[in-house]
Image (cartoon, rainbow, N blue to C red; front, side, top):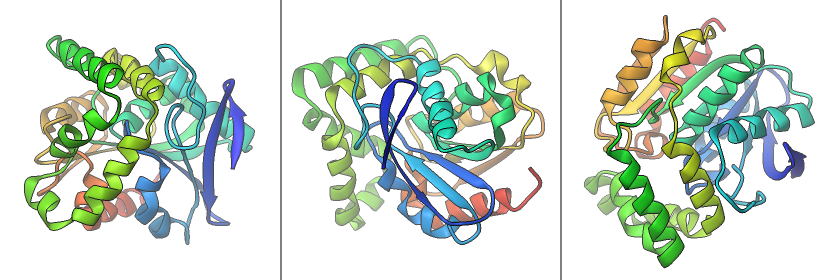
Amino acid sequence: MNVVANGVRIHHETAGTEGPWVVLSHSLACDLTMWDEQVRLLSPRYRVLRYDTRGHGGSEAPGGPYTLDQLGADVIGLMDALAIDRAHFVGLSMGGMIGQAAALAHPERFRSLVLADTTSRYPPEFAAIWEARIHTALTGGMEAHVGPTLERWFTAPFREAHPDAMARVAGWIRGTTVAGYVGCSHALAKIHTWPRLGEIRCPVLVLVGDKDPTTPVAMARDIHAAIPGSRLVVIPDAAHISNLEQPAAFNAALTDFLGGPG
């Protein structure tokens, strides 16, 4: 299904028929299908909305740099289009950054936040890393990102044991438009929500794989320390895409959190 939200055509899917809404927001260079297992888990008890971020999957890919505020406004526009007043929000990596921006701009719209394998700020030396990733996409296309990205996102034992999963994720990376990757990378590189995280009042769960090299445990602890009352769960033997590498541990933490107050 597609709707126009915040001036952009957004592809989305819904599941479940009763209960509170849960919005799922994916990582950079993925699409909404990264949440397949979580949709199966949640849809018997919740109404679930997952969507393709602008420039990804079936959503429109406007040209030019994007901002994190734009990406957060896309979520609010999508919720408005679907008449969703309030929702739990689950975001991984880029999705977690989008969740922070949206919740800071519209706190009344969120029952809770799950911020998985994400950050609220980057040290100055990361600017060069993002510039290099943008340059690679512009000069070599998304194929040039497949190998290095899989190495960052998953531990070596998991990559070796799950070739089918690696092929599936490689397909998501290749399927991301260069415009979408570059536009979102500009937004993510500039994230600096950390000074305002103390304003968040809804329940927050911070999740991170203990072997995540992209947004390491220290970044998760940074978020946890900045949000009063938040929970932190470190998932053993997982790198960046922890919901795929260790789904049982990810799902247990998620369902325990959503079953609580909020």
